[in-house]
Amino acid sequence: MAGFAKYDIAAVSINTMPKDEKTEVEKALNKNENSSILFVLNEWKYDFHSFSDGSWYNFDLIVLDKKGKQLLVKNFSGDNDIPDNGLITNKMQLIYKARFEEVFQDPEVVNALSQL
Image (spheres, rainbow, N blue to C red):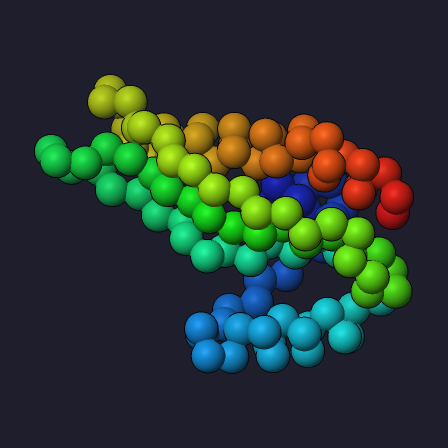
């Protein structure tokens, strides 16, 4: 969230449990009066040990205008191999950075954001 704050973008984390996820997210969105980008993390993990060296993700990106109208709902999923050299934290930060750069360069995402 620090990266967003650097560019004066307010970022809020909504922690949920599977049973109440939709309700909590809807409550937060109903209070919001700004355009929003919502990431719904379905899976976001990595394993790095002698039998595994991968990172998996599956999330939905939702772009909402100021009135709460959904301009885009798109799922992103996949996996990344983690190179076997250097510090794991540095590698994961680079993988996460590349992952978000790919999302924000996606033509459908660019189009939805241009409507805000």
